[in-house]
Image 1 (tube, rainbow, N blue to C red):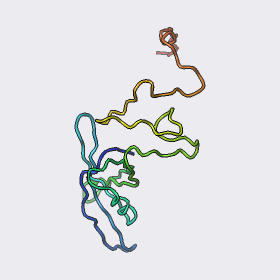
Image 2: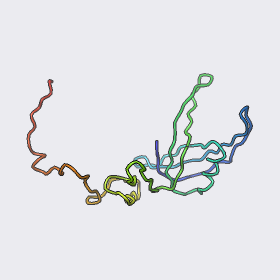
Image 3: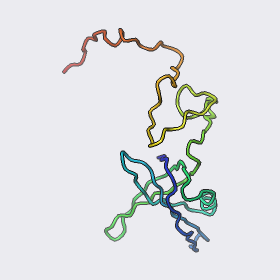
Length: 153
């Protein structure tokens, strides 16, 4: 799962030693827009490398976070873990190595897609989308042609 928002707060790094050796964990508060209101969720990163990756970002930085969600039961109570496994600047462009295209939407091969507008409105403006090659785009006449209903009910 991926979310875009900002780092609202960073909590202190926690360290310890287990049977497997030394470990490090850091929690942070991530704020994102859901509908008309901002939402916050506490996320965490595990391991020295991920803690160092989070250290590159300051409170207020806009980022895109990839997370895994998991829940577990202990003594009749459920605990949910939101573990961030990748953090990158918001609007960062990721190449698709399989096709050579740049992720961010169809029609943006080799270039970044336009940044989302303020307020997290991800709708693209008309004219910024180029249709994939192949079948032509349908016209208004195509949309008004009646289609025979072949459903059995």
